[in-house]
Length: 313
Image (cartoon, one colour):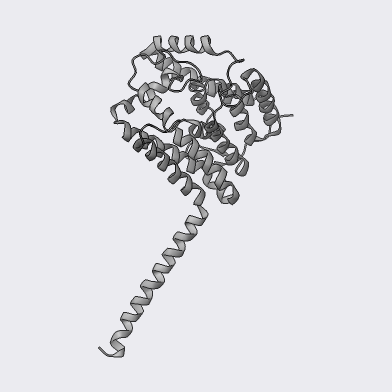
């Protein structure tokens, strides 16, 4: 083969090397720009995998997701349920009905599927804040890993808060699970956004009505359980500040945030309004990060929309 015949081969080889280098550079750039969400996703999946492989089980890992999976199979949701107890199902019957199909799945399939759902939502919440402020990647990744590893719904609640500015009905998710964060609907009352308040309460009432058609007795059991244990002087969790102290502070924060149009403060208020606060509850602050860097409203698909006008004077 003479020199002229080898020239196309050299050109092709150089092109492949150049293309590989470009792909490598693009991959490296993408990883650098998204290292926070990558670390969060891999860290959460690693914790879930460790929880499945290790015997005895690691404390707190996937405990909450296991409660949800068991609730999908339970015939008596609230037997022996105590607020703050590990393993107690405390959400409304509507949530149990929503996840009822999960009872058909083997536990390993459910736990990894549940983790992937949390990761997808967390990535949607955190991608923009991390892109704007790279230093946020470590705290946001840590918050996501804690909650997804535990299998709780705080990441989903954070998303509901963000979406709730566009679709107030999303607040029904907070009301029908954690209950007391529903007090943050004061935001709409202070701003005189009565249609939004009516939508949030109306959707909640509609879900309750439809659910009660199938399991009215379960709703009575839930109400009885909450009323018998909801002493605000005893609700604290790992944060040694009881609810009767936290709740007034939270409501003042809601009112101030609503009057000054500081949406990023609302998730902080919701955090203080939680019945009990554990370390992974801090994942609610993902919503604060999202709203702080992009205070526009977000629809259910995460697209940012123009802000509404500020509250009337």
